[in-house]
Image (cartoon, rainbow, N blue to C red; front, side, top):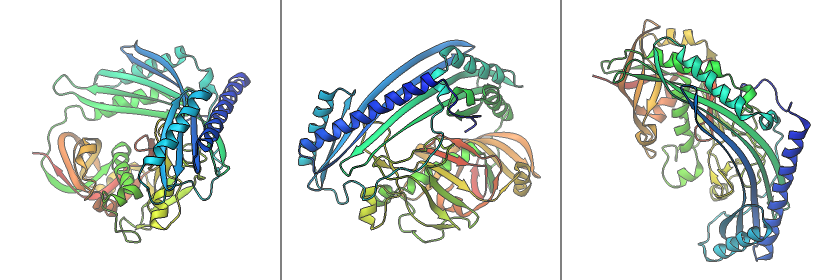
Length: 469
């Protein structure tokens, strides 16, 4: 993240955060005790309190300004190889007890699930600087001004004719997990982000550009840089036309590369593999990528948006290399999928909120390898395309085969230099071939919040089919 420091807020704000964290811990323990008393053979309780704020600005006027506080506890109860889940919104003892009884009742009538249960080993990793207490002290006026500054920076760029809107959001999250295996843990995390979409060109021919910044607190955001990024990306595409079709090498910029890598991450879920929804299902140990490429899941990175000391089941987080030296080393697992596969959990049980039980997913997905300056990346490409935008990826990827066909915009690259802008293209291939055909990585790494979060630089990939006219 781009924050320039953490934990420098007033002691009062810090005390408030700690008080709420203690409240979450007490709620989790209360719900756990109620589940055991109701007959659970094992149980866990995930308590959280979330404070969030959202600001939307257009033409420097505030279109939306809101704050919300929510809290609750999700209870999992295990009975005779079955499990049930229920949640309570709030920390009131009677509601926690009711949710615990409901979880136990559901467990008694559910089907047995092989592998279901608590982790064999619980614990917490050391992950510093997850919360920047300056977020608690930031006023809404300050956040509105950040959004306005972002919009001004976007509109100041050449060729920008309008800005769709600027959105600022932040969240302060206190989490506690307690289970009947004697684990009790808690952590606090903060996040702030802003994004902007700018347009270049007139109506009917307008091209859009996107800017994004993420930090632990609003003080770590750079609104001018975010607005400038959106404006520059829109201006880069102004006057774009439909190019001829060809098969060639392509540089996917960090945003486009992150979207593709996120799709790969979903296919590396052991649960997706079990369901037959992954082209990597029978590829463990096989060569699936360029030997220069490493993809790892790492929830312990201080700047990772999805970092946490433990996962949604209480397993200590860590770094797991999924693909290294071009070979597929493992899938991401929670306790259930790991037991069924005869391996260990990779601490990838994720909870999107207290309202849902944990599911298998990636946390911070990191693409690594030797990086070269962006100009060198284009020079190595020679003739091809620089892709800056992909659309329709969610529906354009076949999760079984890994093939994809999605809309794209970008710039023609000729002789290693950016040439004319291009639009209304379709890029197609397979994600497995894409990983094998990565030729080089740029030096413009960034975080993109997709499927957890993805950190990747631009990727030079050979053998992409680009369909235009």
